Length: 538
Image (cartoon, rainbow, N blue to C red; front, side, top):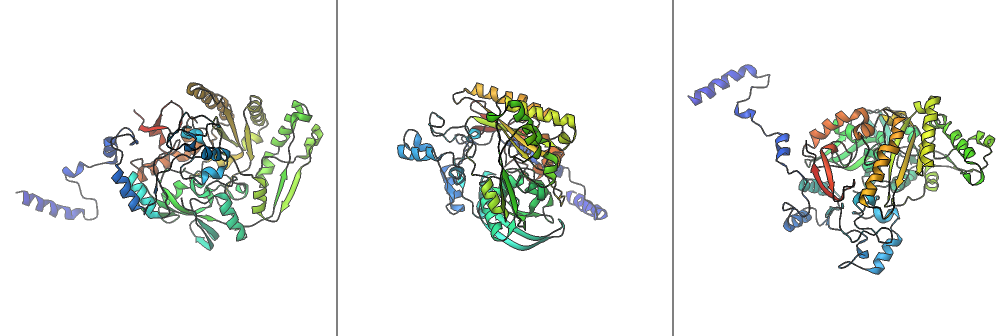
């Protein structure tokens, strides 16, 4: 009888040959991603947990990646008691601690130690009271091939090559011209030099050690050339990616197009591991650099701020002219009684102009954090909004907040469809301010200072730029409503893509897409990576 029932069902299905057949009742009970997530532990596995991989498992992974598995210690370990104490080594490390290359060339270290947890810093800079790994990984794969990346991703379930392509054609994106294919470990000074040797320029970071092809380009990325060619993400023609399920794929305008869209501005450490990126290149150009400064040392406070306001009044015309500036020569400041001698230098090409203008940046201080805001064109077109914007910048400065500002526009001529925060397209003034606390402040005092900064000082900037946003790569870790601030109206689509490509949340980063479902349970309650990553309840 059972066989007859099956035969009858097969005969009936002939009528559904062009449609999805109905499921058996037993087939309706399926294993879903939600079921898998429900079975997962509340927290990611930590080094002291019983589920932490055994030594045999790590040995097997090392064999799989051909001996590329590293187990490095923090660079300041020689500064603390045995077994690694070494006075000479500690002195050498302390002397070069603030040099960016000291940290960038080390696979373990971070450029902003405050986010790691400050668990191993030279005591002459900050006494960590010992050296522990803190928020730094215990194991690192020195990945030089996609196989290494796939092995790492699968077990957890940056390269430095540059290739010049004389002619790259993308009919969908409407681009035909030169391009560079780069490994994701390439830094700004390397790609700029490579482009210069081919009489080309590319859009990259202002700082020479910015890893151009990684989080910079995936988080949008501003550049000295942004007013001419758009953000770093606007330059991408293709990614090679290892996805969270361990596949090695190409994402471009014709394949894996949703991933291609998301990775151009939707943030790093989210959708996969990029092993290489192909970007547009442009003809080299002559560049003129102007440097000047003035201070209250030889003028009144009122006159000084009159000069700064004169600078603000020219933000729109200068951005529209294609400039990228911290300072600008404004003819009418002489009428305010301000005297200065600008240093104006003309360069025949971009590379030497950039190299002379932006010195090597230092590693972030251990007692400072910052926040940023993208101020739209409307704030400088409307006189009342301009007055409010300027007053808020002035107030921040007068209340002892260090400010960095960039006058630039960010509209890309090719108008690509990507995940870049829409606030970038309206921006003419990107600004950052920072807060500092005492080196011997308690965790409670630090948290109080950071909350006052995030929800007080920074809120004033948000209030005068409603609906605008912030730059993901230079932002406040405590940014409220980060989804809107960093991604704007792109967030809903980005989250859908994240859930589709990474349903098990293999990748996570603070304020990244989908990060709201997890939180770091830090040991002292401060926002950093020193603690377990656990699911948010409720």
